Image 1: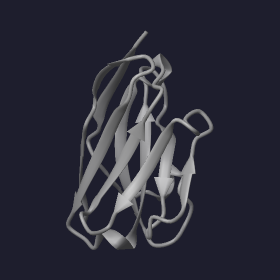
Image 2: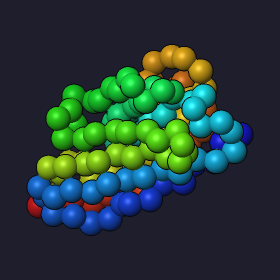
Image 3: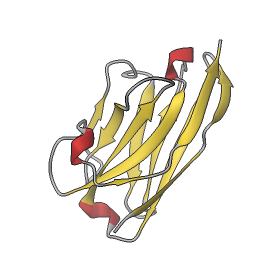
Length: 124
């Protein structure tokens, strides 16, 4: 069992930055792939960024590539999502998720545990 708690969301103007964090507890953190997903108003949940168990491999959605950076600290059981050059279309609830073992990073179906989400609102 893994518990995930996101933090760091808020309201920011377009072009600004936010840093989301996800704290994990309950199982050895280094055994899990981790991902960030988001769900905007009236939209389906979509992949944002993912990181491998070791933290050496990452994957990003095309819409955030070059603007967002995901990182993993196995010593502190946390992952972070640095979001720069934010756009109004980045407005969504952002979720942290974990997946055991080896596999892809961008498929929601592979993720077993999910946090409750944190709201990010980008004003124009």
